[in-house]
Image (cartoon, rainbow, N blue to C red):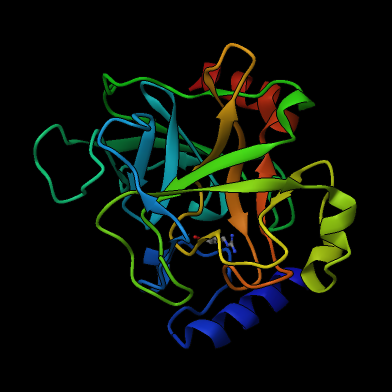
Length: 261
Ligand code: ARG
């Protein structure tokens, strides 16, 4: 129900009838209803080398050089799948310099995924991509502070997908505070989801950023992934933060699934 509400609100906001299914649908599945990073700035070439753009209109991050971590709602299920193209190595998707494009061979969607929590998936690539990977948080210790988000999704609610990678920073919001925003937020799956953003809105991920990482520096000053772009009511609205999959909750399941691919 909460997802339906979210979907309806997004539909209304986007005004794209084709966006049939839900707020959780990746852009391409329906038709570019982009949701780029809002309130952000352009990332520098090479700044986030682990960032991946997926052809169905989602983001992702290199978990290993041959496995992309993304959102469950960006994929259709578990099994052999050669339909997805991963693009990496560039902030400008149209630049051929340094751009690496590799097809998928297999998709693993979180077991039990039903649109409520568990919003993660792995995509196995046909060949490894020789770029740095992004490690994932294995404990809850980094579920606090300020996070970086990045993606090629819409830069305004209902806007177009972006050619250049955008980035922004958003603060952690506690489960209690997030739930108190009401509506779909009251159904937050506390163990599976983390909220981030400003009560005043203005900075957020948006359609097309789904599946991309939310990350921060760890105690060794290295990037660590704490979230996966999942959903929100509209984008960057006041009192309507972004909701991200809580990566540390799934860290061991992600590791064992990856080892099996
Ligand atoms: N579900 C969206 C997508 O498929 C991501 C929405 C994120 N929304 C937000 N307000 N942070 O791209």
